[in-house]
Length: 340
Image (tube, rainbow, N blue to C red; front, side, top):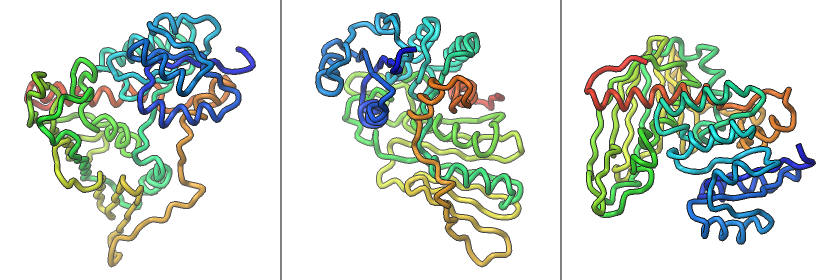
């Protein structure tokens, strides 16, 4: 490697500009040398406005093939994740890939195979910020069985993002760009499986409230309801909507034989009530247990020190949530229960 880690960006949209780029630019050991966006003009504009020393590229394959490049940072929608990731790994580049992992499970498995063939390369997916601050506290509460054995789980994630039926389809509503990824389903499946273990089966229903937008046939649902069966025996009701006016904050509820645990994702607030207590109370998260956003630093640290722990989520973690996302899509299509 050079004295600096040389990174090429494929897909320089809002998430890269506002979340990743400031953190990368703050690290003196990192140099962003190339950018390829959706068009060459936008690549040029991004470099001119934010990275004047970087080279704009018209084709992402040319960027990946750039000699002496250490890593590829992928910020595109899911439709490009698999081809860019696999090409980058084959070229010997480390990869950071934006979530959701891929268009479908088949592509995710191809990415996993490519990463496993090259264990010396770091392959990391972007984690969701949802629940990050209270992640360690939630794990501790559940590991200590302070609610006992969970038997019922409920997630509600409603928004009004797609309530205006006259608006054109967002890229997240375009199946050719997003694949089977629906609303915040994959995000919360990732969080749930981190806290509660694997989901082993799903039964799902969905509805597209506005099946046509500006002449485009929308095939990604506006609403999804999932009955989830966890390995440890708990049953879950997971509800997602992009067409809910005045929607409440995203919320997780876990009910066990010894108590109840709630997580409010808008304020990262944990509430715990145990049998025998008069009421549930907010759980204070000690500063030492707060998990900050260090995603970019975690990736770069792994590149600098090959013996350091590999950052998560890795591609195995991604395949784990893509299995559930695929099962939900299959259940909706076949109108039946699907085992995972």
